[in-house]
Length: 347
Image (spheres, rainbow, N blue to C red):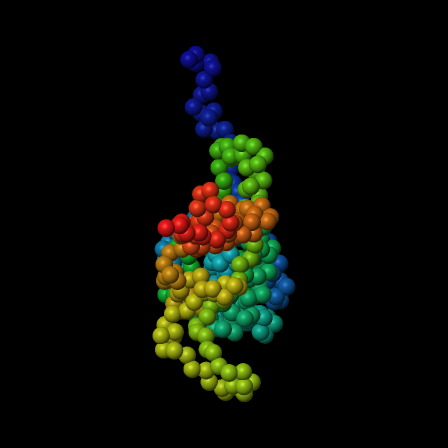
């Protein structure tokens, strides 16, 4: 390299340095995109507070990682959607105490309250705020998630939530009321939605018939099926039924108290199970099938109209013919003889 094309060392030292380029804020998509705006609007509608949003974070965590990230003094709410999927809503000690304080007395005191455990009253006040935040978030799939109840004992979280991957979204806020300002951290653990791979071709039916069959199957499978859980059945006279009232007693067999039957609309038992609990709700765990595991239904060819009656008449005639006695040889007329009665030969 020639000397004249190279900047001297002194010139490079005296040259003004360019301002460092600030790190661009990471682009957050999906559920985290509207968290800051949604919570700021929801908290302003619920309490006389102004929420100034700060940093936002998003990561994918497992159930065990989520449990390790949960602070023991924070407010934890259980979220459930119509499909039974679960999630969590979390607010740190400073955040939920500031929101409750503003909701109850209409302002923030100069001194922060002492740390305390969340109560059922706190859950009732924060339920509408959390639901409004979920409705305002950008991800359309979150509209079905709703606040169910607060989880006072965090040790039950491993039982209440599913063992799946979660999108953990958290954001920092500054809650301001006049000149008073309190920090807050709001987080949501949402069921991770599976994203289909666009590189894989979508299977297409080979003919129009396969597409129609799939559409018919999906429509039939989407039809509601009603099952009744029966603990037992009692048969009694009508007069005794009419005498039943408040405080009446029905005696059930002792064996029925352990098993419960799932009965369809036709009155036949489809499965046998035991009473239990799942995610805080009453549930039935299937244990057996009545009469063993049901086998495949045997298909029978349909007959044209009138064919069944014709086959029945033919079968009846054949049965009558088979049951008639065989004619005796003495009852037959002699060959060459006339007349219908028997004759004797001359001696």
